[in-house]
Length: 593
Image (cartoon, rainbow, N blue to C red):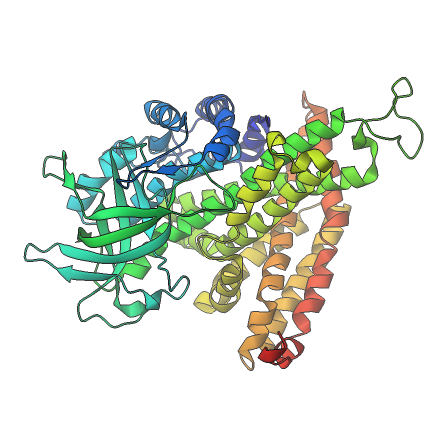
């Protein structure tokens, strides 16, 4: 059975010393997020993850979900009870607005707890995670009456939510959707169509499921401009909030998936189901992107979360498993063999995971903080800056975070050798579960195209200039250490890549398409290097002040140096790939594939 311990100490270090959360204490929501409150929430969240969710992860994966002949779906044994505990302990209310029953705490704190839950049991964490995304869309574009009607039971956890975009014949190109919405005499709409890959589409955890469904109204253009968004509940809801009859929506089948077996991924059939327009007609895609952007940060956190869980198990195994001798002579002469952690190759696998995880945690929490500041910062200028930064970095956090999350899971599996391929150790599940995060909420290739094709040029490049200026300022304030030298070179590589795109992408759009993934990874390296520089500054200050845990901070400085030596030199390779352009890539005829 795999183990898991929430990295509470590391999270607290990032929130307090790296992000300096105390400086925002006067902002709405942050007032109640005192250091003692944060510590209590992280400790309790870590316990819930380790003691309730983690023990269900492996058996839930083995059992999976079950669709019954009448269309009902049941989750694995233990999941309903765990969800009841999740609700009774108020975890779903943590960051929700107080007017709808939430605690109103900062999003950054909610993201920290989300990481723990996803590490312990990614499939379980998706049920409330999708519900939070649906709440965000309703809160963003719903009428006051809709918000008052739908949000309180969703915040309370009595109802969950989904997002319904994909159809059998279309994924990214949503202009092709065929689901239709015919207006009824009472102003509601009859929704008819089929949606696939719907996470948490049907289950036995909550009283009701609130589906957010993209569809086209009668007479709307048959393009993305004709898409509207509708609230389509599993059970219709009476004016007093009580549940009415079953709506005409059902789970046609469960998808048979590579991973996340304990999450019910459904084919959903809508047969003239009653739906309620959410937001303006034919503005549905914009409304749904409110939910998708929030979800993309959460998916980036899933990459980190799986990496953390896999790394913990690999590190424990490497300290315990004995094979061979250290190359420099026996590390433990009294034993028949040394622990495999003495071998440089094993250490490389562990250190690549550690160097990614600790900086990725800082980057994701930094991103979540920008979400808070985009809504709550004191001045319009500060809110605009935060919104620019998170808009720019969201595709990087999602794609780079999940790519490296899978890489870390695979390396961790490799540390266990043959045992990593065996189910009971849990590593093969981590690899399978991590894989989906690169695909859903917009594949990582789509994220790269979003970054290069939209985000770089948005508002005349304002967001990119702002972020680059922050990295330059951090470098200027840093001491002359190897990390500073390496990051300076990598930042120059990123700026050279940006200039090349400006000069070559407009004349040949294929150059942008060819370079996009390499550019995103280059930016990801620089973003993590920036975080490591901030972490180094905080740990150096703690050591100078006489911290009571010097080993924690000394390990940070060593890991930062490893990142500088082993990760950042890769940016030069990525720059060479970008500058190669698309000529050779596009020259080969289709028939040759």
